[in-house]
Each structure stands twice: as structure tokens, then as C-alpha cells.
Image (cartoon, rainbow, N blue to C red):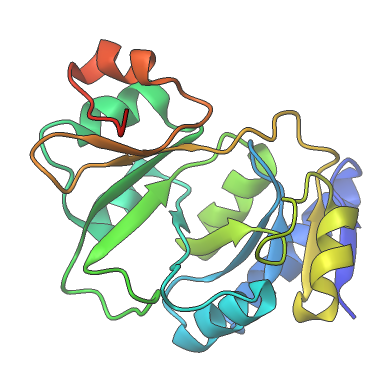
Length: 215
């Protein structure tokens, strides 16, 4: 049975963060609050944990999870190159609801699924998430729900869907905004929006100029 910790209580928060970090290091799954919706996370460098995460969601390798980081330095270590726009976007919108798809560092030994050599990176604007990520390092994190079901905006909703597949639930209360992150592909010459989300395209264009969209 997964343990749930109330992060509004300072003692429970500290204990929960310790337990969650230990669970991640053991290759187990944890649920954590973010600035969008709740996420289900695993150590990004433990292939068996990534497999367990995809199975918990009912998802295949063709939908690899994004990677959340607690620092910009950690993000830089995971990519070959941020390209001409990546650093400006990070400076403007991280931590926050912007996911950047970049070419992954080819020297890394990890297996997130069928990524085609890319990685989707984000630094969430949530104190509990950032504290955990600074303990664990990069985590593969997807929305804490079964595939096709509504995204969880409370720890209880996540637990209802994911149950015992998760070792630790960090309860940060109801998320304030369930709008998903904006996803921007930086692997091509012109940045392309892959998903509209919390950061509108006009704001992105205000930083880097042209952004391609499917419209």
C-alpha cells in the first residue's frame, strides 16, 4: 500500500520527501504535485522503473514520459545542445509550465521509450517538486492518471487511479491550475509548438520571434 504524506504539515513534508527520494532510488514510483497537475515519477536512469511507470499508466513505449529537473544545470547535462533559443526560453519561463523537446545527450545510458533521440524537459514551479528533484536528480514524470482518464488534480484522485503501483504519495493539496504545460520542439531549425498549454504562443514569440504552429 502506498503511503501518503500531507505536505502542508512540515513534519510530514520532511518525512515524505525523505521517503519519496528513497523510493525513487530503489526504482519505485512516487506521485508528486506540480504547478500543472499531479505527476507520477520514477528515476530517469532506471529502465525497470520507466517500464513500471508506463505500465501503471497503461501506456506503451511509443509515448515516453517527459523528464523533470530541479536545476538548469541538470537540464544542460541531459541534452546535446539547447540550440539558439533554449537558454533564452529557460531564462524567461523556468521554473514554469514550458516543456522543451531537445536532442538528448547521446552519452547517457537511459531508456525512456521510443524517443527518437530526443528528451522533453521541464522545471516545475512547485516547491515540493523542486525539493524532491534536488534530492533525486532528473525524474521521468508523466501525469498521475491512467491513460485516457482525467488528469489528477489532488493526491486522492491520483491514488484512486494508480493505487498500489505507487510507493509514496506526496499530497500538496489541490493544484491551482490544471492547464497542461506548453510543449515546444527545439530539434528543428524553427521552434515548433507541439501542444498548446499554459504559456501562449504570443509570449513565446515575444522572446524568440517566430514559432511554428499547426494552424
